Length: 214
Length: 93
Image 1 (cartoon, chains in turn purple, yellow):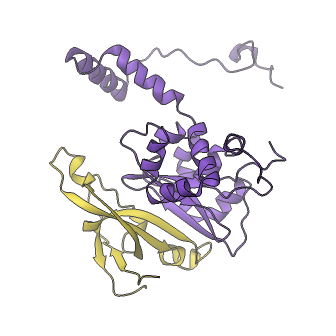
Image 2 (spheres, each protein chain N blue to C red):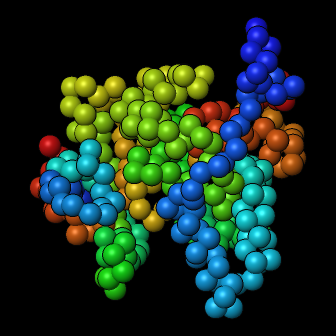
Image 3 (cartoon, rainbow over the protein chains, first blue to last red):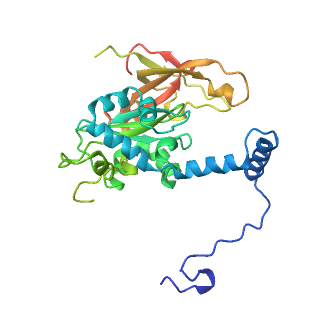
């Protein structure tokens, strides 16, 4: 029962989070020290730092979804995206900063899936912050060892004839999957198509929604 | 299709900041594309002026990486490996 332990739960039924009455951790101290130095040395203002944090929080998978929907509807853009995903996204108006991006396309023959086994590299400048599971040791270790099993846990079962191509972002590049365009979407506008493109479909752990799902 | 250029990832296990995953060391794959040159992360991590090195996207078969334990031998893993970690390999193993 959700309300059995009233002492530990808020009125909305969630556990109380303990106050942070403990010394700063090493990295908290480091963050404060660097932020204060940047301000003291007139490299950045507090307002600029807050604005940058806001900008990062505001990025969402909707940006990537718009890129994918355009690739589905504009063959020249699709070619540009596959040739240089960073330049194509920037040309579309997304500020991807210094990020170097590769787009990989799903076809009936190939299913692509992205992982960073070493840490949590993710195309944040286009998709926003990564989901927690993307950073988990379980996903990072299993995606390269048993990707089909991981995919099946995400509800994606592929025919044996489809090659699974796992991309481990070990160094400078970031990756976005261009999922296959769902059937029955011929008449849809790019905006309507973008609504079908999920975050997981751009990581390769999901498929786009179908017209029936949405 | 162009002929595949096979490369083997060095089997070394040096200490420090290295962006070559241990599970790929000693494994042979082929160059999917060449990127960079980018600054060597092993020097960047320690504030040493970095050399600019080519970065290879190397494609490995699951059967090469995991042997008989591979989930599906023909599936692949692509990883970015800095050129100083790679040596030419005559053919697939």
